[in-house]
Length: 453
Image (cartoon, rainbow, N blue to C red):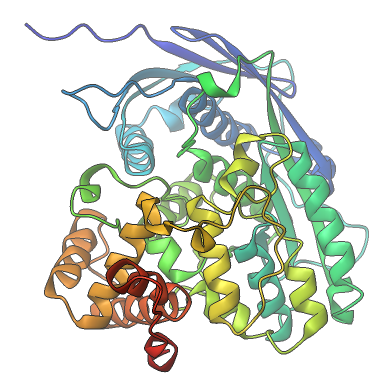
């Protein structure tokens, strides 16, 4: 007998709010600050539909906590979801429905049974026109800016490489991220004069009256869809067709640290090249604009990005104001950087491998300085994989090959991906390699890893 499907979930947008009803009940507030306020009168119904779909998927993903069982160890979920849209004729096309369902499945691993119904909004909108900035200025591109270390390093690198006059978009589920981003951007203008040519906009969503964070899904894998959808709408409204994603190549590809993770270990694919390709196709067609989602640092490591400005002490000090800890997403009080999570481990690795003293104030403990650091499952797997790359273990190359197939990366240069992962491994062992010596030999650290780097 077939299992009964969950009750359908309905998503409706009305005047700055998103309402989720049916099997789930939630209200989401959508706030657009700064430049985006000028977007509201110009935005088309189909653009609002795209935001509604992306915000609805994000909300459902976040408030539906995964329930892992022996029969479902990844906690995969099934969502029969109906989006209420203004342009029913467009969204109800089978091709478009398949695009959205496949994109969400790729991002989250869950099954999305997508359908649409008509929604007659109170205001009939004209076809989308470009934002009037009051001058002849037009941004060269849109860049997503989160305030994390990749964002900070990416922004500095683009400015040092001569990029000018682009528009930063902070799309977030926390108002604190917006405040930090504005402070970071304003501070950067003191160190890089032409950073004054930047403009900034914010798109923030907040759950209203939601239950405690521990009852929510912490992975929030659908965030990338919401962030990229808002960037696509802004790009179209400003007359540019490029969106830049500041993510290092190793993080974007997100090769799982174990064979078992190939099927259910993708905690984030928000910057994965295949997702960006899917997003590009969906948004370009929906918004009638030839959009491009680009990874300017797709063949660089995080340490490589930091290394580009490592000799400038002012910029390095500025980069330390970035926030990388997973607890920032969970909004745990008194924790800026814990020193134990994967993000903190990789942040420390990036600074040190770039030749920079890590001055991050970790609020718990630095796992790499504890008596038994390899009790941390992530750090142990992180080092084991790095050791495999440096030693030429065929198993890690085979894992990358399988990952390329499963995540539809066959078009990427395989040797370039191998070189990227090998470089990351060398950098990792230059920072943490002595921990492996500690495990094998006790306290007699072997400094040969520094020579390898």
